Amino acid sequence: MTEKVYVFDTTLRDGEQSAGIAFTPQEKLEIAKQLEKLGVDIIEAGFPCSTPGDMEAVRGVAREVRGASICALARAVPADIDTAWESIKEAEDPRIHVFINTSDIQMAHQLNKDREQVLTQAEAMVRHAAQYTSNVEFSPMDATRADTEFIFEIVRRCVDAGATTINIPDSVGYAMPEEIAWMFDEIHQRIPNIHKARLSFHGQNDLGLCTANTLAAVTHGARQVEVTINGIGERAGNTSLEEVVMAIKTRADFFDQVHTDINTKEIYRASTLVERCSGMPIQWNKAIVGKNAFRHGSGIHQDGILKMRETWEIMDPADIGIPLGTQLVMGKLSGRHAFKAHMEELGYELTEEEMTRAFVAFKELADKKMEVDDRDLAAIVTDNTRSMEDAAWRLDLVQVTATDKGAPTATLRLIDPQGDIKSDAATGTGPVDAVYRAMNRITGLTPELTEFSVKSVTEGIDAQGEVTIRIAEDGKTYTGRAADTDIIVASARAYINALNRMILVTARNDEVRANP
Image (cartoon, rainbow, N blue to C red; front, side):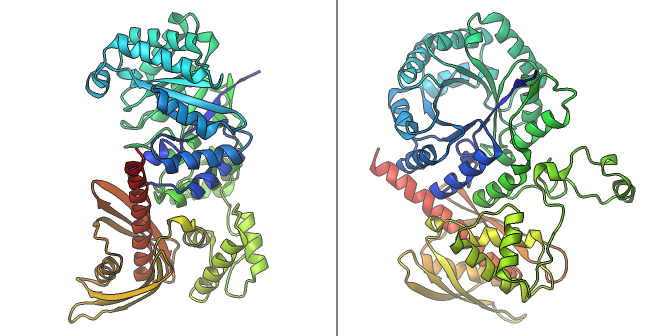
């Protein structure tokens, strides 16, 4: 009988700390419901003390999602813990996650405390959290750069104080797999009460080793892994859920003592949903869910695949929920019923309003393309099922005049947050520059454009172009994405999407300053 490895998903908390990501409450709830379908055991829904808006978002997840423990993060201070409990107390199985810095460099320069002060504070705050629930997790932050004897002592005290999960974080992605293996062995041998808690590992990917480190922890006794969808997260990201889960499943011969309860057929759906909501495109060669993960360019590989798929694929894409190809040929003669059926087949659950918007966009695209494949449909969903909360401004019309003589001119018509129509025009060094200048004039916003990229969603001269941009203001970065057969239109939509994300984050920060 194999032991279960519990999957702790922190996409909504640590994943949201990625520069440029700001999930709306509706997006958080949508992702949480998909995580529920995926079968994750614990959903870390947010950091409630960070903003009132995040507290309400966490509370919404706690109220509506069942079948998974809902967790809230809290610093080792009473106000954080009290706020965390208020946000999750309606959950079916609420968990409070308490953390404190434990490396000498962080204790000295971030907390201005010595070791004994940190030990006392951690123990007291775990006891405080345990007054609310028996489901308490404790994390000694930056544990892999801390003195190991100090880690053993703080873990021992916090287990006695009521922590039922002990998480060992590699907070800056510093450790090597051999060091993680040694540390977990030592924890089992040196901490006499560790049997009272479940051991967990949290990895960051600064050196590209977080998946290897997580799997090393599992083979040496960790029975909880902290992960995110697509590996999104602070700096270089977190351990990727899909990589750890599929490694355990694919190499069951190696991981013969453990299993997870993840429904792997929901992985691809979760991945594309997080990509859409976060605005962070998945790299083509990303393991498991990247566009090229199951594509073969080599003639030798293609020959092998045609003879027997397993010659060059160690996983079946169907096991991950990746569509094997368009089952219905979608074109301009396809009706709403066929469109709806195919979208459901692809795993999209759209409201009637979203379905109507997506179908209209599909018909517009079908007039321009002979066939619309699944990648086109994914792009349509991206542009037409976004929460209206982050649509502070909406694009109504874009018209560009450009020649090889003189400056291009862009005329824009936008709908403001109150529903009023605003229009203006501007010239620029190119048509996209003119569009962005006109948009800045209308909105009154002037962020710095730091990145602009265009890629083809599909193949052929009639392919949709997907534009990804990043803008920056006050040291913060915001991402926008959109697709259209007209690159100028896609550029305008991507820019307004990024502006809306910037407005959302700014509003949240203003709310925090107004309600300290």
